[in-house]
Length: 618
Image 1 (cartoon, rainbow, N blue to C red):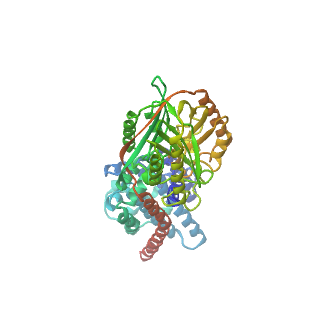
Image 2 (tube, rainbow, N blue to C red; image 1 turned 90 degrees about the vertical axis):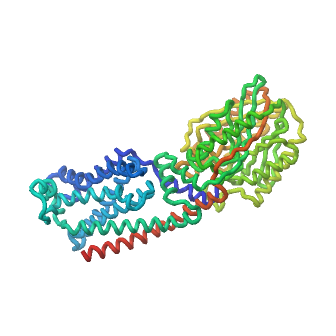
Image 3 (spheres, rainbow, N blue to C red; image 1 turned 60 degrees about the vertical axis):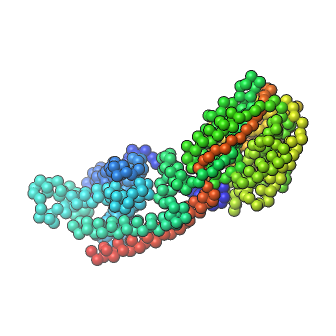
C-alpha cells in the first residue's frame, strides 16, 4: 500500500454503520420535542413538546416512511435504515437553522419574519441535501431523484399551508375544505405570518438548490469519467453501502474498472503415510483486499474452508493492483488450487531450513523433494506489499538454481502503519527488490545442493479470543513445525494485516527450543473494514500474543509425526483492479476529499447569496 492508497483507506474512519430505522426515528422525535419546548410558548410544557413533535417531527416520520418505498418503486436503493438516518439529518438541519435564526432575532431587530425566511431556506437546504444523497445512492436523474428527495420539504410545506391559515387568501373550497385545509386556530401564533407568496419563494429556492446540486455533481464527476470511464457516485454509493450496510455494491464499481489477469496458484500439502492430509499451504498470487469481505478481502478464510488439513494461507508477493474485484473471483482461485492439489506428487524427504540475508531482505527456505518453500521478510526494517513482478522474478531466480517449483511467501510482518512517504512498498527497480531477488537465488542455490532426510510435521492452531477490530481475523494463529534430521523450524501464521514494528523479532527470540522460526501474517482485510491501519499487536497485549504463540509451538512439537510433502502450481484467470488502477482510484478519491469541501463551500456561498437576494426582492 502506498501513501496515497493509505489516505484512501483512512477515509473509512469517517463512515459508520447506519443505525436501525426505529433508533433514528426515536431520536428525531426526541429532538423535535425538545425543539418544540424551546420554540413555542403554550401554557404547558407537554403541549409545547407535542407541537414540536407535530410540526417538526411529523415531516421527519413521513420522509422516513415514504422515501425508501417511493425510491424503491423508482428503481432506487435507499434502505429503510439509510432513509431514516437521512430524515434525521434533515430534521437536524431545520433545527440548527431555527436555533441560529432565533438567536439572531433576539439579539438584532430582524424579527419573526427573518425566522420564517430562515425556515424556508432550511427546508430548501433539506431538499438539496436529500437530493444529493438520493442521486449518489440510487443513481437516478435529477428529475426522478427529486421525487423522493422532496418528501421532507413537501410534508413540512403542507403542514405550514394548513396550519398557517393560508387558505384564507383563496376564494375556493367550501366549509369542508376549509375544515381540513385551514386550521390556524390550532397552530402556534408564530405560523400566522405565512402568506401564499412564501410557498412560491420556497419553490424557487428549491429549484435553485437543485441546480446547484446538479452542477456540483457534474464538476466532481468529470475527472472520473475522463480517466476511468466510471462515475464517482458509483464509488461513493458502493463505499458507503459496504461500510454502513455491509452491502456488495462496491464490487459492481470495481468490476467496471477491473482488468483480466492470469495468476499462479501454488499448493504445498503434507500428508501422513496413511494418506490423511495434515496441513496445506495455499498461495495464490493475488492481494487479499481491498477491505472487509469485498473482493478477496476474506480470501484466507475461504482457503481454510476449502482445505482438508490445517490450512495455511500466507501472503503472496502482490499489491493492491491485484485485488480481486468481487468475491466470486475467489471461486476461480480455489478451482485453480484444486487443479494444483490434484497434480501433487508426494515425497518423504526434505532439506533442513536455510536462512540468507542480502541488504534489507532476509529469506528462509526449505526444500521438500525438488520443490521449496521460501519466506521473505524485511524485519526489523519496515515493509508493506511486494510488487507482483518482483515476486515472479525472485521465484524465477530460485528455479534457475535447480528447484522445480517454488512457493514464495511475503511474511508481511513489520511495518509502521500509515506513516512515511511510501509505507515501505517494495517496487521494481528499488534496492530492496534486488536484495530480495538476490537472496532468493542464494537460498535456492543452498537448497538445491542440501542433503535430504526424512521429514516430520506437527501442527497447532488457536482461534484466539481476539476479534477483527483488534487486528486478528477468524483463522487466529497457526503453527507448522517441521523437523528434518533433528533440526526444528517453526512457521507461525497470524491471521492479520502486517505487524507492529519489533514484534516479529520479539516473537522469534521468545520461541523456545527451535533452530529457526519465521512469523507470517495472512494480510486479511477483514480487520480493515473501518480502520485502515489495524496491525497485529496494535490493539492487543504483546505479552499475551507471545505467550500464546509459544504455547502453540510447544503443542506443534508434541504433534510431530512422519509425513510426505508435495508441491504443484496452476494458473487462474481472474479480474483484478489492474495496473495502476488502485493508485489512480486513490488519487482521484483523495483529490475529491481535499477539493470537494472547498468546492461545496463555494457552491453553498453562491446559492445562499442568491437566496438572500430572492428574499429581499420578494
